[in-house]
Length: 426
Image 1 (cartoon, rainbow, N blue to C red):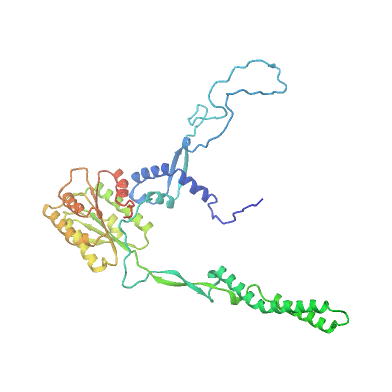
Image 2: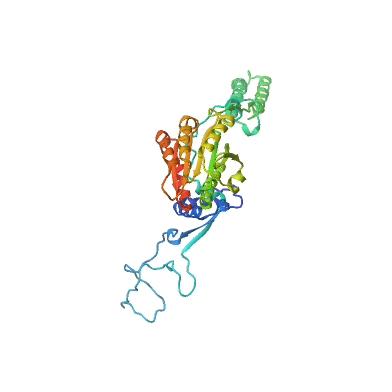
C-alpha cells in the first residue's frame, strides 16, 4: 500500500484548502450577503471584511440512519417485560436518530445559522468577481519598458534553478556511450582472446599471455567503472532572454459633478460609486492611472483626497470637464499608447445650451480616443437635456458608451456591476 503525505507548509491557515472549497460551495449565499453588505456600508468602511451567515439547512450533510419501518428482530438480554411473540406498538414520528429542527427551544438557545468571517481579500474578491475594463487593448509603446522572460534555447552555463534535467541526462548518456564504446570493444576482444587461450591444449597454452590478458581485462573494467554517471560537462541550462512586450497600461478619468444642484446625498452616492471603481482598478490592474476631475462651472484636476472629501459648489457646465479631459489626453496620454476610460457621475442638471456642446465634443473628439465611457445619473426625477444628448452618443457608439441611472444607494452596486461586467470576446 502506498501512502502520500503532504508536507507543504500552509502558513497560519491550516485549513486554507478546505476554506476555499467551502467558499466555492456556498458561493451564491456569500455573493448575496456581500451585495447586501456593499449597499449598507459607508464610504470609509468599504475595504474591511464581512461576517456572513448561512442557514444551517443549507450546510447540512446527508446521513444514513435506521428508520422505524421494516421488519427487524432485536435480541435484548435480560428483558423481563416482554416475551417472544408479543406485539409492540410502532413508535410515532418520522425518521429516527435526528435531533433539533433549527428552531430555538424553550430549554435554551437554538442555533439556526452558521456564521463565519470573510477576510478583506476574500470580501473584495466577491465584490469584484466577474468584472473587467471593457475593450482593454495592448498598445505598442515607442519606448518599451515592459519585458517578459522567454525561452531561448539551451545553454552550457547557467544557475542551478534553471537546469534542464532531461537535456542534462541526455548529454550524460551520450557521453557515457561515447567513452565506453572503444573500451567495451577492447574488453570484449580481450575476453575472447583469454577464453581462446585457456581452451588451448595445456602443452600449447601460454601462461604469460593469460596473465597479460587478465591484467588487461582488469584495467579495462576499471576504466569503464571510473566513467562518471554525470559530469559537470553534461549539465545544460534553460536559457532565458527578456523579450519586449506591448503594454496594457490604461488611465481612468473620474469626473464628478459638485455643483449646487447636487445635494449631499447625491454627492455621497457619487463618492461611493467612484470608491468602488477606485478599489476595483487598484486591486485588479497594476498599470492603471487615475485622474480625478471635479467640476461645477469650472473644472479642475484634483488629487484623491480633494476629490472624495473637498466641499465646494456652484453652477453646472459639464462641457468644462470634458474639455479638460480632452486637454489632459492631448498633453499626457497619447491614444496610441494608452487605453483611455472615462467614468462620469452627475445629477443630469446642466445649462441647456451646454448639453449640445457636450454632444459635439464627445462625437467629434473624445469618443474617437476612448475605449469606454460610462455615465451615471444620480436622480430620482425625469431625465434632462444632458441625458438626451448622451443618449444620442450611446446610439452612435453602443459598444463603447454606457449609461445608467441611480435612484438610491442600493442601486450603486448593481449599476457598477452592469457597467463593468465581463463582455463576451467578439
